[in-house]
Length: 137
Image 1: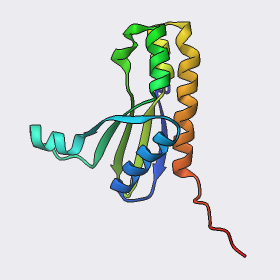
Image 2: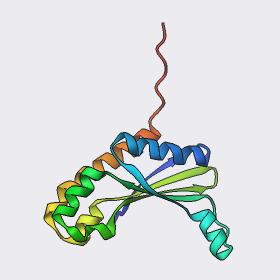
Image 3: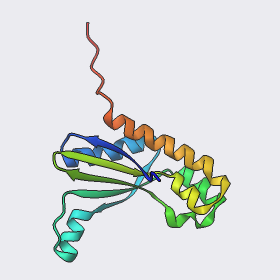
Image 4: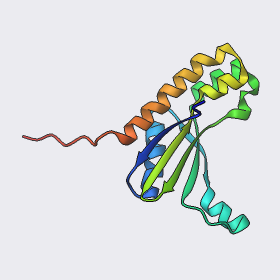
């Protein structure tokens, strides 16, 4: 089972995290939480890991619809997007919202999850799209 969508970026980590949040916002997902796993694990258990941030992203319109269809879905919100260093690359992994619908086994969630998946995929695609060049003569 595929449970995430993945893109690989070649840019500084902090810049990648900012771009992830920006592209998610462009498609309607706000950042509810941001967990710095690298700092947390170092502080709590003195474990060193590569840079790793989990962004808790939420589209309020979709979340509201999902909560009406299935009030218990709140335990599966928000949509998590992990941004982590791997060598010289930055890996961006977004949870597939379809998992929420399949776990809840509520057919009313399927179109909501599908819309969320489409929007998240748009944001991920924008991260890997070639930058637009300015107009020339």
